[in-house]
Length: 486
Image: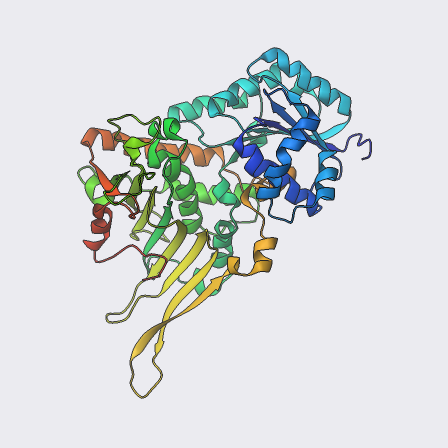
């Protein structure tokens, strides 16, 4: 390595012995390093409470990287990357320990860019930021960026408090709010499909679209997140952030340019344009559910109330189906159906655009498959071969992730986000305006749910939510579009 005066980039991980670091962050660094995408002169400083040395820590992380790296693991690459890694025993709840961090920074000398990744529980975000400032670390004339994971507060009030506290140490331009969904390949591809194809952009409006569906279904339960999830629920855990992010990209106007500011500005306009549900109409627009164990379930399959750290009388929702409208010229009057749930029949995240159709023929259908499969499915109508005029549906199915070369060349979400942060590109991160707008809508919705005592329907584990979610669409002559595209 060069001495790097004025050139070195330092990436600091708070919470360096947690699953997020082992499974996502360090494998992302390995991928970037092996593909020569790391800054020319960099250091990774890993902070943790466990009494490891740098040498013992490197031995601990090696099997994790062998298991979770996207690119082929090679011993010689890992050894070279490890030369840039240092582990430091630090209790980040103790302000005095930040002097140890500052000593390491001082040893490294000239630095161009410092990034701080807070891979810790949200209640530690503000104390860490405060200690960084109080220790004098942020006084150094370098670029300082802090990366934090959702949730950004538990409601609009707590989000505002957190934002104010973070801004006492960092300016808002230096705060990178991570929603890892924005790092997924096909989320970004939604904009490409829309804005780079006149075929779609010309019909992406309320004259041609019958309805839009955004689904994020999981086969797993709450696993080891019971204590957090029982205080949160699916509305806050998934809808307020991940699914509203997708909705904002599906519904946005074409940005004036490719800058983060221009993209985020258009996204915020969509969330701001969400129409509050009329009083007395909530049961027609919302279905909440909670998975339970069925008689045929395996003994290891638990219902929500049998999960660890769940209140015995909990009414927390693990499933949400929601019908929304946005008051924009492009999509005004188009129903937008959102659903997310745990312990469902299948694991799938996708966006379905169903177009209007003449009587007697199947509607054209565009599906953007986000996870686990990545690709685009298009159904249209054509004459059946033969002498009759019968019309039949045909389809084109592009499976991006089915191609080995595409899988290898497609960055994982955290890999993409870390690289963007190095480049100071905030287009893949959530703006404060987006956080504020999303919480405003969700807080109002939750107030209505509590005031109107909306029922939480049980649904069997292994099913895609309660029957009421199907009824919400069938009463309007529609149905949920599944991965079989029917």
